Image 1: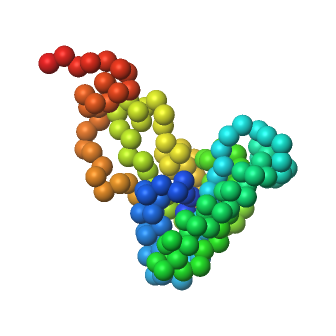
Image 2: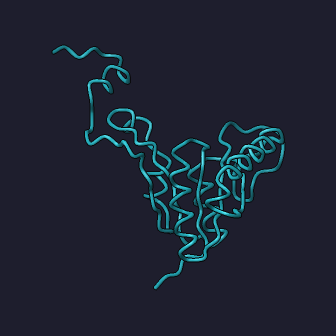
Image 3: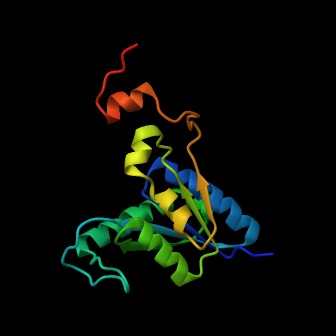
Length: 168
């Protein structure tokens, strides 16, 4: 039986991320595991810190410092439930950095939230969580929002995403 000793929780500071943190905290308590919270700064290449080894992105100094502050604030708000976490900020493409970090640190489980996009928004934009699930060698537990719809495409999707008015 595989033991869970290291849990990775990627976050974008959204309310959905807190649901993933709650699941990770429960699992960490059960297995006596450490929680790693990862925030990835995405964006264009810029001058600043050198890229993380194996990454093509350099991290802007100001962006890194701001990211660290925000991650610390976010983790601090959940500290009662999760205890101490290891906070990590990386720059690059979210999916790539999540998978790279999991491999480098020997993560046993990734717990992440999905935004619950449906229909055309999901088809066109995709999801970091979905891409991580498809390509990860580490088990991934995805947490979806409580009010996840049970349909694929709605009139609202068509009207908002394609800017077409549905005629009834």
